[in-house]
Length: 93
Image 1 (tube, rainbow, N blue to C red):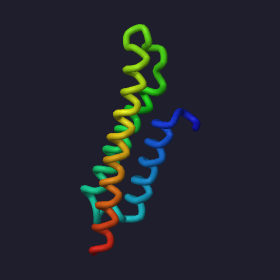
Image 2: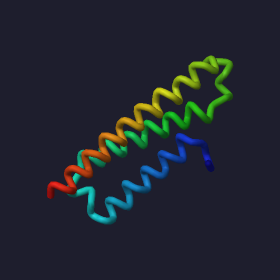
Image 3: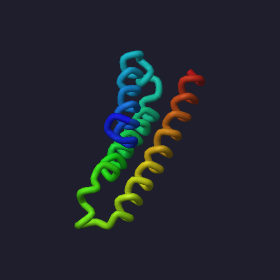
Image 4: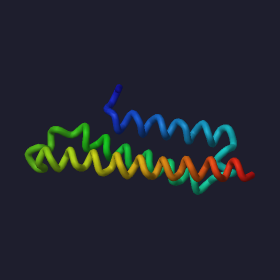
């Protein structure tokens, strides 16, 4: 973990979408890769919640932990749906 779990996962997913664009897979499953990129953005937001222990004065620690959990789960669901959708579209064509 270089930056933190959420940000590392987001960077990895965004790199996957860049390499898929380079390989020409995004043209066949464009909406699916939009879902995957949205999941990466959600993981980025989860990483922000993880990396901000400084806001304890303004936001309680529990809210920061719940923010990480909520956006990590949302990101996981978006990436899961997008990946399954991309697999389906790539196999059908």
